[in-house]
Structures are given as C-alpha cells and as structure tokens.
Image 1 (cartoon, rainbow, N blue to C red):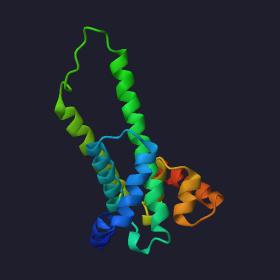
Image 2: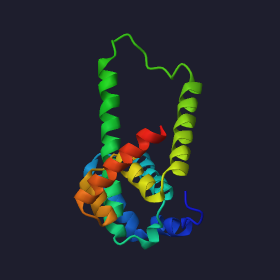
Image 3: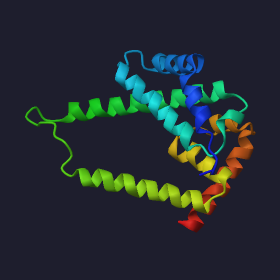
Image 4: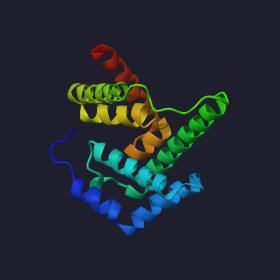
Length: 172
C-alpha cells in the first residue's frame, strides 16, 4: 500500500454533506427498504474500499462517478447477501434453530489468511496491477466500470487483466 495515503481527504470526503448524500441516495435507490444501521454499514464499507485504494482519491478525475459506482456495487453486494440469508433461512427445516458458528476461530483464521494474501499481492504486484486486481477480483467490477474509473479503453483494461492473470499464475 502506498506510503502517504491521503486519509484526511477521505475523512473529509465522507463528512462532506453533498458526497454523503450522493452515496446514501445511490444505496437507497438500490435497496429501498434498507434499515438505518445497514445503510451506515454500507457507507462504512465504501469508506474501507476508499482507504484500501492505492491511488490518491483526491486526484481522481471524477470522484462523483467513483462514489456512485462504488455505492452501487456495495448496495448490490448487500442485496445479494440479504437474498442468500433469506434463502438459507427458507431452506432450514421447521425444527432447526439458527445458531452461531460452531467455531469463531474458523472465521478469524479465514479473515487472517485473506489479509495475508492481500499483503503478499501488494508486495509482489505493481501498484497498477494491484489496483486492477482489487477492482476486478475483490470488488467484482466489470471491465466497463474499471475502464471508466481508470479513464482507459475497455480493450486496454482487458489486455491488462489478461497479463495480470498470467502474473498471478506465476507468483501463486
């Protein structure tokens, strides 16, 4: 991750009423009946994504577009998770009770492994390659969205992603 991340800009960005309104309205359009604490969780997730970016968001050519796309993606993930949770509950037999995971250690261990994998990739990929990896693999963005965010042609992004897959095979 970059040495001098502009965390102050990100904090100001999310405290700015106009940008906060853009993000919240985008999420509410996607998820009309979202509860307040879920909405705040989505906002927090967007902030985490912003903090994980390798490039300085204060220099982004269109921060409004970045916020809107990111908010849409977070809202879509929220809807997918909500649907999966509802499907899982519907599949339970009538007598089954919902229980906490048997081992919280498994969840913690999985999160730690994911963190280690990200750190390994940050060290072994260039900043541009890692950013592409985050957009495509972690954030599950489309090539068109990535091209818009990076200000590049879709064909260029496709070629870069193809080269990135080869690099990943080599280092993993």
